[in-house]
Length: 120
Image 1 (cartoon, one colour):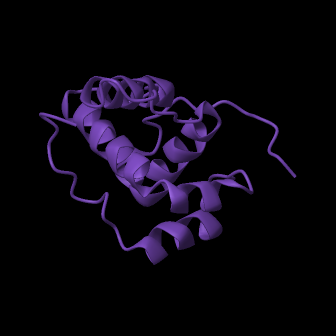
Image 2 (tube, rainbow, N blue to C red):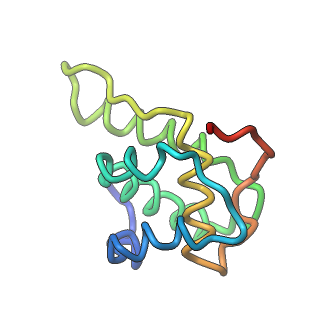
């Protein structure tokens, strides 16, 4: 994604990312999220970078993870003209938002989080 600042934590040790999901007392994640995330690390990296961009621009709370997911879709579509549209499952946007806030305590409350029924 062009013109994005380099994230200082998107390349966090993968074991730390996975442990943060399991150890989080603040957030629950869908059971299928760790597997999806492991297969889509590049989406995670783009999500983190764009989150930091929004935070640096002065947004401090109640931001929408879906806005970031839609931007990832847009950027990928523009870069890969002629290919199939890049698919990011909206179902995992809330989990990525929760994971960001779990990893970076200074960002707690940055994303709007709704209650939801988790898959069993």
